[in-house]
Length: 98
Image (cartoon, rainbow, N blue to C red; front, top):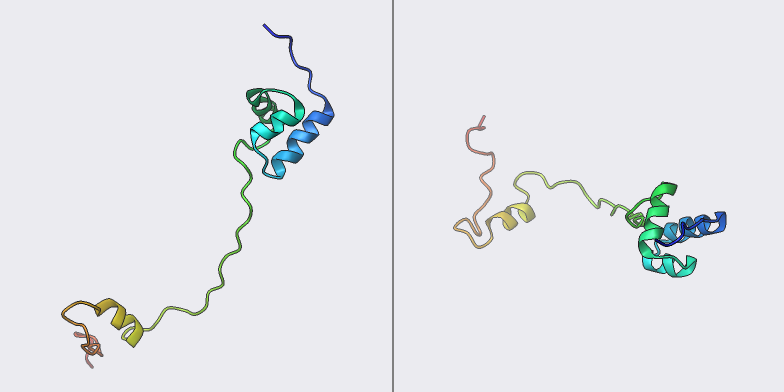
């Protein structure tokens, strides 16, 4: 059995810093001259995430709200290539006639 590895504070800092920069386990292992599994175990003991940290994704701006019932764009998209293609929207909807 190989002797127990004693981790230094510099190696712990290197593991944490490289993982924060989304480096692979293999790359970190090469830098600290240890096996991939040893680096993963050490990171787990340090409380680092197993998965690579995900870069934040900005939410796309909402350009407009939903179209109202019967809007030509919405009605045309719904009825395209059907028997209702080109038919006018039945406005007011059936059953709601006043």
